[in-house]
Image 1 (tube, rainbow, N blue to C red):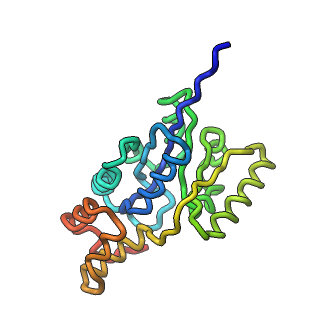
Image 2: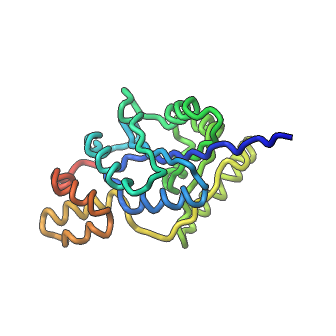
Amino acid sequence: MKLRPEPLRIGVFGGAFDPPHNGHVMLAHAAISQLDLCKLHVVPTGIAWHKARELTPPVHRLAMTRLAFANMPRVLIDRREIERTGPTFTIDTLEGLTHDYPTAQLYLIMGADQLAAFQHWHRWQSILDLAIICVAERANSTRASGLLESFLEKNAQQGHPDRVVGIHMTATSISATRVRQTVLEAATGCSDPLDLSRLVCPAVARYISDHALYQAVLPG
């Protein structure tokens, strides 16, 4: 009897990446390792319907994302959302990837904050049909564990069992908001510029400096 080959495992990691930071890279490494992904599509957001503030222009976010993940051979920087006209929805990206990889299993990577809002996403139930949801569980984070358990219970009742898994990570307080605030404080003399080196890779730090990004206070 001929055994059916294992489907390709394709990860999908979307976000504003404004900017991409060391926490993003840590999550990508953990996802590739724990989910045994053969490829991870990192997808910078185009027009984000859910963001209250205006994002940094796509050309900069795309360039920084390429720099941040440059040393990860299984990562593919995916431009489709940036090149799409109109609002960006995850379901559209997943449908496109399903067309690109018709026999693959897709794994959608997200943080606990995204999981908390997931049931407000456009066509979220269809997302569960196309991809397994993989949520970053940081060490000692009871919030992430609680959200994951609650989501699993609800969706098992709604016919989507085994569609959500956890990705185990070490605790980190890095966020894009913290990076932007650190850059702004350094530009105004309120913090040490070296603080940025703990949050982003050297290439991204240089790019931020060379293009004078995040040095003005923006609404939101």
